[in-house]
Image (cartoon, rainbow over all chains, first blue to last red; front, side, top):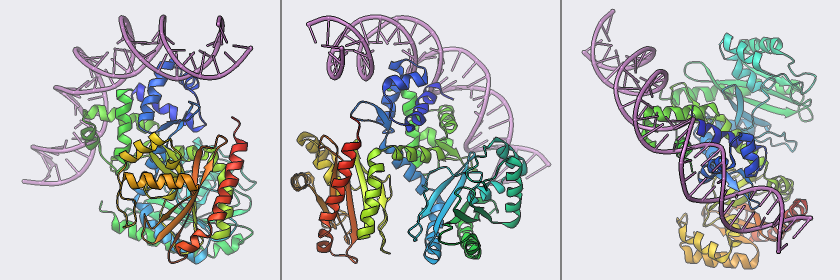
Length: 249
Length: 249
DNA sequence: AATGGCCATTGCAGAGAATGCAACGGACTG
DNA sequence: CAGTCCGTTGCATTCTCTGCAATGGCCATT
């Protein structure tokens, strides 16, 4: 690991909190101002930070562009997208696609509900990992020791009274999900929103992504949502097949 | 500028093209493999690159998260969003919001058309700078020498027969846009798609962002689209007012 | 099963780059 | 007009990064 690069990269999350001036950056990094200046300059040259008119720094444009290109290079996403669109045209609700990476689950695609009531979420946002249906699916596929290790490390915020409260309950839930091959989140994140999800598997049978359908209570009840499960699983399986076939190893 | 950081950051666009292994990265950077390894390690620790199962590297999850947080910190975007939604509910077409930064124009928000025919674009994608309505608006606000400098540097790809062909034509167009206070792109990017756009101004009158409405020929003709101009300008002005008021110096 | 080659990885010594200091300069303020 | 604050620059020192060469693991080939 390189100290200089390490320091430079530490600036990024710092600026993600909001714009900062040279002094603040230097202080947070615990380095001399001149050092911070040179790091910022280098980041600037690469377009990762931007200097606004008041001379403060904030995250720059190329960061978006990079994130975009990155997400477009994920072949699961590319393959899945038309299927998600198609499912959305059938059932209308919001559809998410998510992957697991380094202790985080994040959305990599989304098709908006065609109902007026929409939920807030964004591609790139980390998922509420202890409650979301897609998170359960992705974590359920890890090996038993990995699951344990991850479950122990997590926090279990009680978004609602139905949120999963602790590691033990979470591991039980993962076991159930693993067994049944699909997952739900019934009001565990937002009181009035339910989700059902299904896994997408690669050629080796491992779960490479997960998709879910979300809908607020006011549009469909949890029971009605569950009747869509066969369609969701069928879509997920179709994506799995295409993905497995497509992967040239 | 720091050499080490410079090299490390050069890895990111490289990986944006697609996954690469250690040897490829070292070669592209023209450094020893051990050096490349350590740089990649550092990037990895910060979550900016991810090591996939075949040991190759690709861009990592935190990059998305950072880009997300960055875009959410842009106050123009936050203020504009509800207005864009509202306009979309009135007229149905795709709406974009864009800013100019360091010789690039990029979309920072988008509301999808409610018509079935949608256009392809993505938040974070650089805009076709020589033809897009929002690009014209943002560049038209630069000082005359700046406009000249930028116009000279650009390429003028002929996306269609109606694309702006060269710097001279572009500068004329910018002058016109500056004069009239709104802009169009009539089939200059995609033969069958027209856009109209209006600027969003800060308290000092400078253009801080631009919005546009895009619709394909098959839904509305260019003439019909132009009839929406008053609504678009009204929306842009409303955003300008709120933004100017909101900015605490 | 054994061998060869490829690629990632590590320890080390030298060299080159990053660091912090101190001084400068410009902008804003009282 | 003086004073202060913040960003910026040149420079000597030091520490870190670099490239080399050797190791070890993995896969394919025979």
